[in-house]
Length: 113
Image (cartoon, rainbow, N blue to C red; front, side):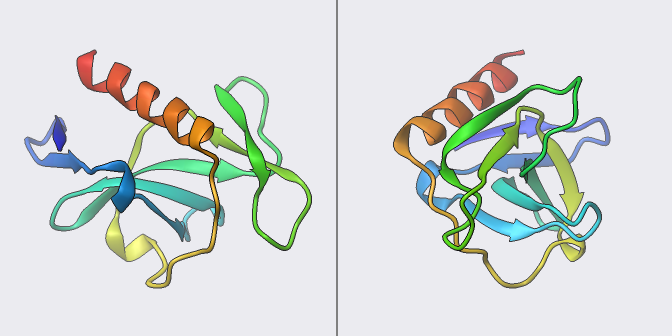
């Protein structure tokens, strides 16, 4: 487990890949891949069906959910949000091994910067 320090001196712990999960982020209405946490915040990457121009996204191998056929996109930008802004329930998503490796390599670059 590695950690990232925020400006206000709180530390976010980036968890192992097996811990990662998906929850709904109420502020944007999109799903979020949760990759770390501290006492009251999650570190996450946004997941969307229609990425806006100007942001770094990559297309996943699998559809956004098991019910839809449209591919999802993960934004390559680590965000931090309060836990109360996320759903209590987990969402069912299946990511390919290649997708998770891309996210992991992005997080490693973020930690070293």
